[in-house]
Image 1: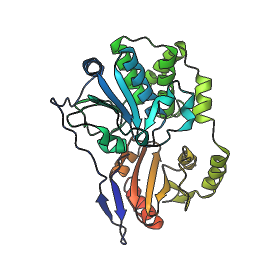
Image 2: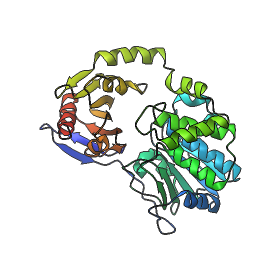
Image 3: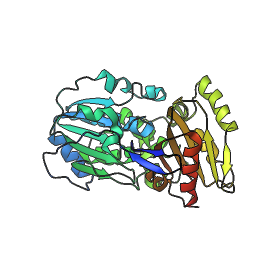
Length: 347
């Protein structure tokens, strides 16, 4: 999801604002499309790495930064993981090395940086304040699977058909001929499992399943990972889920569902939108969360034919065909009307 913000005016129209973005100068020419070989070569070539991912890092993103840290340790490269948010999702504390993930606030000076590893992120804006840590002349390497990726790096390994960024990193580890120990297997399995919804979503390919099976052979524990990622929720979040279920509304002849919790700014709402999508006849669901007064984060999910990344893209956002998001400024009812108007164009 992009950090571009749209504003709904009094007539329901949309106007675009842009968050500040650091301009990065590259030492060499950009490689608009690369493969595992190009990524492996870059990892061997550079010495000082900054590893980061998108704001509000999810299971694939957190696993991806830990995979790259493990790779760089094996290559004996200096590296540091820094993310925008103060506290990464606590559900992933079971992952070895979780404590090595630092927030931007904790990192006034990351030390020398020769190359930024931007993982699971479609635009430079999506790494948030971490971009401010890059020195002039730093290079950027991108590994991502978002359809909306802007190929903003010097080297870009982007495959929208991949189930997850961790699936792509499996290819990088293989190219480097590094061993898949239990730690690496746990990271890769977790990332793939998260982005496929526990191997339930339409992006669950045969390749994703084969990699997951291989990671189990190398020590990943599916039951432990599933329990941590999918089956744990705080008491407060469970109570909030009850409110969310009561707030579900249907629109456009039952083809669209929505959830909006007025005044709630909790970030512990992961997965709530899926309940709105489960309803018979619903093709698109969206969840509105007020991040601050008059500014909403809108998440989209879809079934079958509707590509919600295009809907989110209308508002400066992005994502995947069946899972995307954006940010919109305005009053709640204005934002909801604007979103419904755009969705209606695709039904």
